[in-house]
Amino acid sequence: MSDFREERINYNYMKVARLLLYGVLAVLGIAVLTSILNMILLVSAAGVYVNTDSHYIYGGDVMEALTVTENGYALSEDMAAEFERENQWAMLLDDDGQVIWSIRKPEELDEEYSRSEIARMSRWYLKGYPVHMRVWDDRIMIVGMQKDAMWKYNLEFSISWMVFLKRTILAFFFINFLWIVVLAFCFTRRFAKKRELARIEWIAGISHDIRTPLSMVMGYADTLEHSEKLSEEARQQAAVIRHQSVVMKELISDLNLTSQLEYSMQALRKEEVRPAEIVRSVAAAFLNDSIPGMLEIDVEVDERGEQTVVKADRQLLVRAFRNLINNSVKHGGQMDAVKIRIAMWVEKRKCCIRLEDNGVGYSEEILCRLRGRKKENAAESIRGLEIVSKVILAHGGKIWFGNCEEGGSYCVIVLRMVDLRDRLNYT
Image (cartoon, rainbow, N blue to C red):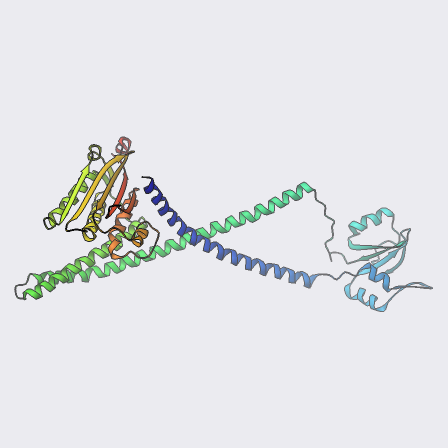
């Protein structure tokens, strides 16, 4: 059973992997879109900053444009025009804090400043005016802007707070990444569900439209097959038409059932059934319909298996076992007769059923499809086995396909038994 468990894990892994693939693609799409939007936002913000950035006149440039004259300091015409254009002002303080020169200085500002006032304005504002200072020998050049023209503060942070900020930023990006993943998963799941529901509705609609004309074909073919007015050859041709119509009807039914079981749309009418009874009745029906000597079915059920009861949909279980035996009949018989052996036993409160035949076995491609490793449309040769798999999984059971070492193929089915507590709840 360890191999069975491993194969079942692989089946679940591939199913989850396909869902994750859609999620990853959605994550990448959303991440790329988010990155593009963020880049557009950053470029736009940078453009706004460049266009609205106030030009700051440096104190060193002002000092170079000043010349000492007999009447004091004189500023070059170019620099004076720049102060006018930028709507800025400047003043020069001596070592005692006296204003010895100024240009466009606001009237509300003083003509003398103490050391404490100079210290305050070096970090903050001067009566609401944002200012920049430049020490030049024993003089101080102060260049200022108009009120509300610039936000100016000296910021200081402790190392512990910076460490906390770094962790917070990392957590912020991690949370955003998780949010993108969850959002992508929700969109992917919803899209996939709508897509599959649309596919199921389309299949159901096509099946419904085909069923009526197909029934008419079957009816007319049956009438022609039993008509005494037609020749034997014509009646045989009508029989072929009727038989192929029956095959088409079964294929349509299988297609509908496969889609409904895959997406849990098939309502299971569960009841207490004995798998041993179902297996024997299905095997007996095949033996009765077969040519004598061409089919051998050996059913072995241990003592506990005879009394085993499971809660399942009887019709679906009958169909599953019919499909299994029918597959062995079609593809079995390496020699003259098809030999099928069915064993049933109980292991750890589980009902285990193994069916093996003497056929040619499964190819690697078919095994990959039966084990859920490929999602292409099932070929007609394994459509019945696909229904078997989905029926068992719909009942919460486990199923495993493989090839026997001595030749032929086998299938192992595990169903949960009904215990006393389940029976009390069920009744």
